[in-house]
Length: 383
Image (tube, rainbow, N blue to C red; front, side):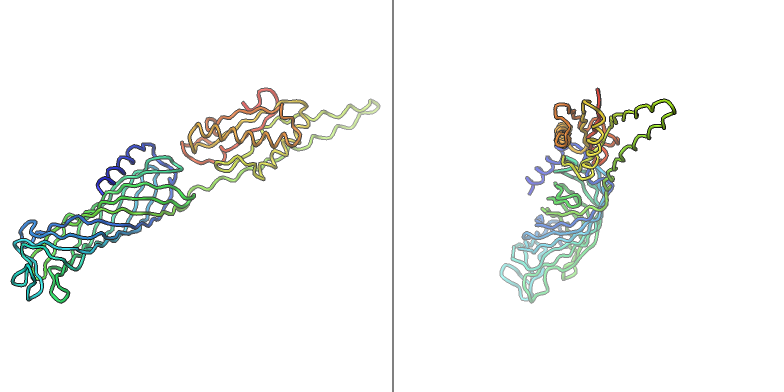
């Protein structure tokens, strides 16, 4: 378990890029998994470390409600954990067993010996956690943090089903925990993750079955799987539909007796014609096809003008990946235009990636207005 803690801590510190994928959203989370309780030393009747309780592997589960500020998350947590006791080692003060005693004990107590026990330990806690997120903003992420709160610890141990038991009591007090883990998105709303939790209640004060004070602490290590649902978030902006230019005005009536002048030549509408794309896609959408059809119609008035394509992306992803994505979008638009009569030899393109956003944003933000190709006609177009 300690090796797992060290490995997850190193992974979380190695990824130093703040993650912003869920910024400004509320979320709910559930987690559950296995728990190991540290051997529990008990101070019996003022004698320090006079008994030790050993526990088997238990379980730990909980739920959280939180808010993502970007690189930092704040969440409220309710969780419950439980494990069965395996055996108890008693010292000089002894622990109560059945009234007639049992092998290894005397006068109804287990003294300076170890015996199997029935019972267990559980803790219900309510915590406030602060977490720092690291890693790619739209993929694998690591996180680390901690929390403070209050916990109710309930303990019991019995050496005989019919006897009074050694102790059966509970206490409520301050608790703290350390958290580290990883998570990855399944979709725009759902994440899955793996989390380590170190949980500690430093002061647990009980009374045994014969009225003596029993002081201890509760420490556990848990490995938990988690699933998270993220609410809200900015919806992608609707893609604007380009309006075709109005038809040219009719020629003025010819003055008499002068012959009417020839009708004015229709000017070449050089654009730009802006088409938009879905996130991380280069497919021509129906809205984009409508705009490109208008561009093809307008090209009939432009003679042999060159066609320039300028491909752009938003700032999600790496600069290198976004250059490639912009090139694929240029290729999709070029294929669409050449398939509708514009000679491919007249079409050139340049991929700008995320360097020329239409709407300035922070790095990692998905902005629909920046996922585009601009089509223009004539020398120097698109630059």
